[in-house]
Image 1 (cartoon, rainbow, N blue to C red):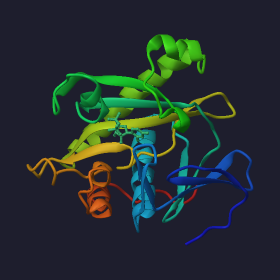
Image 2: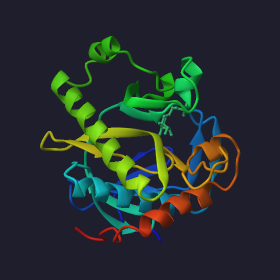
Image 3: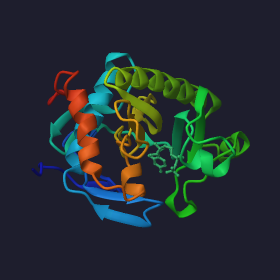
Length: 250
Ligand code: UDP
């Protein structure tokens, strides 16, 4: 289903952002395109946009219900979400509960080690530069955000981690790590933005012991394990079993 929308504002790897009749609102379309390794690997996965839009809507509502400000307003259709218009801060904020991925490629930390307390990393969001990991000094030098806003972002990211980890745990889903993006709205408020889905989170099935079979996230695509959309669908099915449907109007 394609919705009536205004002009395209921005097209990313997994989403398109459109204007709406209200200046402070945007329509977000979740695409079926899948990319990994800075878009060196690409594919189209039928049904991915729908599943990710639904999962994101549910998870944003979980966060909102616990007082975490997000850009999400409501789900408009299967692949479409209405959100507050924000200016995205060009930072990827990654929280890790279990060591894997780039952390284990770049450090001697063992794959699967539990990270207590969780680790927070900032990356500079720039495809041309390959989203480099930032040091504290580089983050300060870039001057993207004030110290106050940075502390607010860190605090929000850790809160999101506790809320999502606890919520998913009840569904026998392990939140390994995830990436958040933050935006600033017209009132200068910091909001959790972008999406929260198996494209941006690592999620393992606690009911499955085999290390490959338990993967329910984009690592299935990265490692050519197959069954990507089915795995995302399993995450959605468990969430749907625990929540009321996402709201469809504001
Ligand atoms: N991630 C993301 N977008 C990115 C980079 C990472 O959503 O551009 C997510 C990724 O899916 C994982 C977490 O952030 O849930 C940590 O990713 P990592 O740094 O391990 O990167 P990798 O090299 O494994 O993609």
